Length: 315
Image (tube, rainbow, N blue to C red; front, side, top):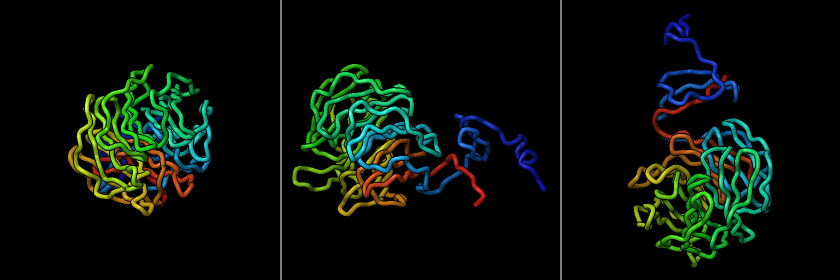
């Protein structure tokens, strides 16, 4: 029987975390998640089940990556914070201010920003991997807003009631900048800083779901190609040139997933569980859908088309 070493010239590596730049066909054992993994190729993006939240909830904030995510707040209004390592969630120290429909930004489960929320709030808190610390408030208190970026460079936009205000975070203060073209609530966003952001979907003052997509260039918002499906209460992740839109209400509640390539949206595989008001983290290659309504603890992991890390099982 031919062994992996005979075929590939090396033993299966034993690592505490996934390699930063694996090559196609590489296999390793991740001791942190106790899983056998490898880099393969996926022809079409799809969702698969991940580990459940410890506390089922909707309208929570989500940030980070598929293997280093944070979920915080939620409905009913609570302070709970949980960290995801790629296979399971762990409860950590609470937010100082219990709320839901919160704006979220962050690069991992050790650095995040939570702002706004319901009850209508301007509170801003930063997460350092252990505790939440209160910082300077938003200029405009609001809920059902969206946010993108990281803990030191974020953007907050939209909100209830159908706001178009946009605010820029520099690590210590919020500054009001140019407004969205279309004021709306329950919209989604994608971006890794406050100079290149995508805002999409949402609901207007007539309670009509929208497909509008706008691009922020650091100074102004410009309308670009619409989502294929109108919806609000959806969630998004990724960047301004490679974004993921998931779930929401058309109506009805949907599991539809769309991928943005920098110029247009393409529908791909649906969430296994259609839901709205969920949290999200990750990228178009490796995304995460967290909780949502109907109230659930379900987490789903997205593997995008192309080379992707896959987890092997006995099945």
